[in-house]
Length: 142
Image 1 (cartoon, rainbow, N blue to C red):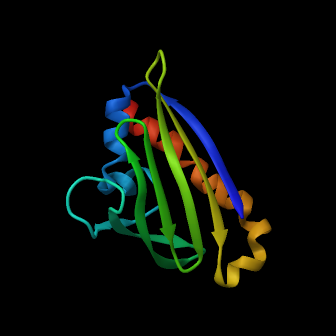
Image 2: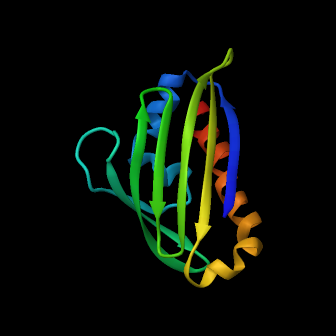
Image 3: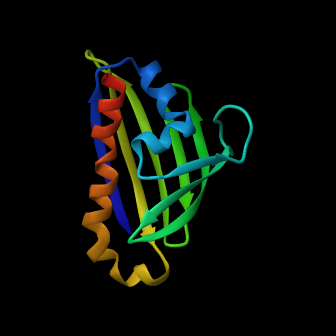
């Protein structure tokens, strides 16, 4: 299992940061995914489902995504399942004097042929995930 943990301060109000992150169609702008397809109608809530396409090691994959917990302006928990990994985690949104502290935590478990190389891939996967925070910050602060 690969543990992921990071946080970043974004100089924007919690409402703006939360709204942007909770709009799954924004994911390709700040996450390493190519596209998003809603499977559920309406706003995010527990049980909301969508699919995302991504590339990893030169191959294209589709991952199933489900929101497992949702507290407006506070927390979004999720599960991502793909043929090569499973990611369980959450985003926390906290007010700060300058704006919003966005924290991400979770566990990624590699599967299939990558399972045996989990230790080797852990630094690359952490970097891939950690690179999303500065990208999100740049988008929201520009």
